[in-house]
Amino acid sequence: MKVLVIGSGGREHALAWKLSQSKSCTKIYVAPGNAGTAEEPKTENVDLKAEDIEGLLSFAKSQEIDLTIVGPEAPLVLGLIDLFEENNLLCLGPNKLAAQMEGSKIFMKDILEKGNIPTAAYKVFSDHELAKKFLENCEIPIVLKADGLAGGKGVIVAFSREEAFEALNSLMVEKKLGNAGNNLVIEEFLKGEEASFIVLCDGKNIIPLASSQDHKQRDDNDKGPNTGGMGAFSPTPLITEELNKKILDEIIKPTLDELNRRNIEYKGFLYAGLMIDKEVIKVLEYNCRFGDPETQPILMRMKSDFLDLCFKAAKAELNNLSIEWHEKVALGVVMASKGYPEKYETGFPISGIFEETSSAKVFHCGTKKESNQICSDGGRVLCVTGLGSDLNDAYDEAYKATSKINWDGAFYRKDIGKRKK
Picture 1 (cartoon, rainbow, N blue to C red):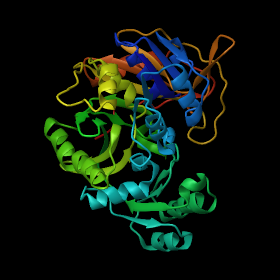
Picture 2 (cartoon, rainbow, N blue to C red; picture 1 turned 120 degrees about the vertical axis):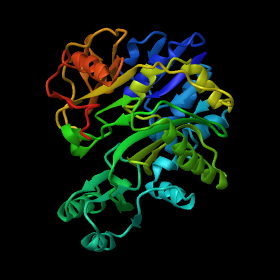
Picture 3 (cartoon, one colour; picture 1 turned 30 degrees about the vertical axis):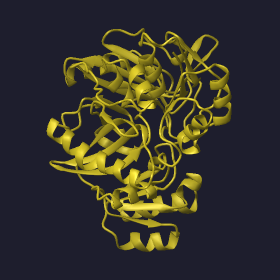
Picture 4 (cartoon, rainbow, N blue to C red; picture 1 turned 90 degrees about the horizontal axis):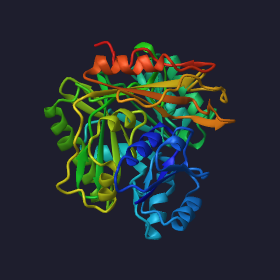
């Protein structure tokens, strides 16, 4: 089977790595890929951007691709699935309407509200002055969210009124995130601990993936600005078997029911970002794809044939299927460029990247090869993932490997999986 993976990050490297292990996989193309995907067995990079949906369609037709798997959210929101399906090409991911679960915070919150799914209280604003007036009297801390896609930078937690006004000005006046900030969701600050709950859907059936926990803040002890994610581990002890059932019954299924009520079919990965405070679970956000960096530790633990799962999901044949997992724990540490998530420089040679072992793997997030040298090419550059008998063992494996790698300006959190209770 020939597979096309769309995207260039750590998630897409992990997808290609896991797909290549399937006996039914003959060839993987990654568009555009990175220096890591280029080195995987059966895998070749293609010089096509993830948002070039017409170019990707032409490529998939010319190469007679059997299955396309979309990594990032942007091509999904642009309608890549709709385009491929119109051309009778098998593709895994939500269509343009369903992808609004991530493409519009307002749409997502409306789904939650109408479906009676627990989430933070919120208000929607399109007028800067009205939003400012609301912020003058609201409880602090408060959360401001750009409505549109913002590459993981559209959520700002303001711990003072001054920070709230600065965030509002940045999003609605200075337009630092472009049109994504034209409309704003302002919602209550939720207390608790975050967890990621990702499921695979085929339009009717749902298979939950292993639980995981992401670390969004840039700095140790959950300080600093929000990022796309600085590390993750799987499974998380936060989600017990009892909570797993509760999340499926009270959050995931009602969400899909509400989408179905609107005649919107959801196929592909659905990612719920949850805030858990003892037995109280509320939805922070939904993403319409596999998480990054959650994909890396989750796939490190998967025993099942990943290509078979994706193929059956795309064909709406997930009924009676389940996923086998290694009992070990996996933990990934993101190594980033100095300045991330704001301005950062790229093009620095990376030293110390090692060959894959049974207990550690380096997934490339933002890299390129120049003159036979792997160089940094993004804000998040690598996700070094360790596998161990428990969380402490996985931590040791990941950080032992991380300590060997370096480039000018490299930094990473030292406390992934060590969040203070």
